[in-house]
Image (cartoon, rainbow, N blue to C red; front, side, top):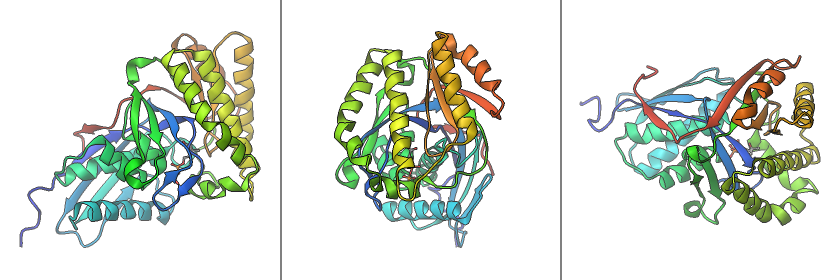
Length: 333
Ligand code: DP6
């Protein structure tokens, strides 16, 4: 028996996570992962997930190795995604998968976004299949909402849609449209206690969720205007107030989610101080405790140094607008 299908090959991709500027929160269909609202993000060059995939006919089950895998759930999510790819392509072989990140996972830095984006690209390549970015976005979305954005580059909008085929992302501005910096502040590498997937299910238990729904369309319109005009002050004000609105919903969900650590507050106050001193910096936070501080290249060194010097900060990474996933040739196995 031939051991390997000649179409199959070992392929590796590098994908970056994103920072959500207008967040995806709440799902109108949790199985298909159709979000309640459109979301907008910036892909982060400098933070990487590398993934190698090889489908092989001699395997009797999927062989998954994720760096720092902390629970069986992570491995199961990968197998479920491979099942979706098998059912979509009608190719029923098992795969070997290995993945490695250069930033901590499950801490609010969208590691599932970059992880599943890299996996989706590498899996289709390993099967010898060509798929459009839109098709890859639709497939990746079903593994993790943020992955649906991380298959694209630059500044990205995810159209919430009303069916699986109409819910996908596209780039609204390329990475080189606006040179921004994201000072990614790592306060801890512990896994967050409530996953985003669990949190989405609680969104509607907050009395503030319906208020958000009432003005979200306007917010999306306004932030696109600020990106289009490269108006950093207006952009930063929207991003920061969006983060605070989002966390108000987390605080007031039942049961409540308090994602912040003491260091999160320390960073927020330093950002306020920096602004008072004339440095342009604005924060945003996802479901974890780690913080993104967005700034302009002219202020990035000062902002990085000041944030790094805070007593509760472990590490700081500097990211800028990034490209869509790209193929790499140093395989992980
Ligand atoms: C707060 O994409 O991690 O970061 O679809 O269940 O995998 P699942 O959730 P996930 O949710 C991300 C939520 C967020 C906002 C955002 O990135 O838009």
